[in-house]
Image (tube, rainbow, N blue to C red; front, side, top):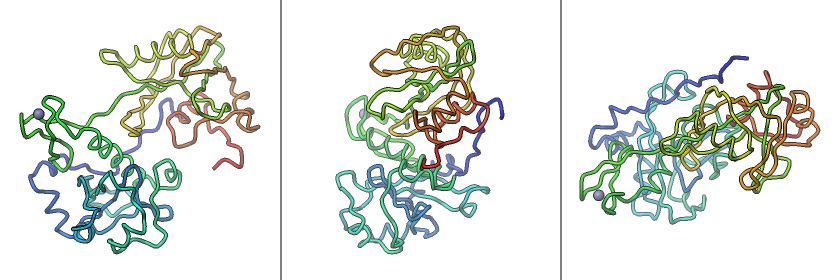
Length: 325
Ligand SMILES: [Zn+2]
């Protein structure tokens, strides 16, 4: 196994120059060449193992004068060679108005071309069966949609802001200030003891059998390494003497970028804080594999950077119980 987590190539060219052209989004939609992904709240239209991508011009026309006129249109970019779409496919995100609990039948009555089996689904429900391009689109769309939903007003003067640059900037018409999408850095860490055992923790409303890596948000003015040291100290009371960056994963629910580290500690006792972490346990490699197979503990799914970090320490693939989805 590599010494760092695998780096996934970009599958979408976000077209940061193209999207600066005023009016580009309207032109693109009218051109009849763009495909549209549709988000309602945190759910997208999914059919079988795929995101439903509709004809953008057609749905823009069909949704006119309905309650479903999109609240925001965003330029997602164009598919790169190596993606699961034809290279150059232009992609637009239609964000339906938040105030509606969208019922599939009602929306579908206004829009042609939706497969019969299509359903509204959240990322977690479908991520395991989507191809890498659909996964990347769902994550990009969720990140930018969450930002628009929570940044409708100017933080300087309180006036409503307007999206521009294909939906990647919001501008305040009163003071002309520009506002850019934000991402909150969070560290996620495997803690390895002097005997090479791994420290995992659990807490919160999850099943008491759940154990995972430790994680927390980076605070203003703090380096990533300092955040690792502080969070691990706070959550499980162990001292971190060294940490190494291994890779990252976007987790825009609502706006995180997970920065994966492995850290070493000279300590062998862990003291959970009782708030964020209520249980902590050291595992040797064979203990961890046995506990997962017996169902004694549940660790993070394959989709998560937590699992990649744990398997980085393990040195290979950890077998799940046969009944794991
Ligand atoms: Zn303002």
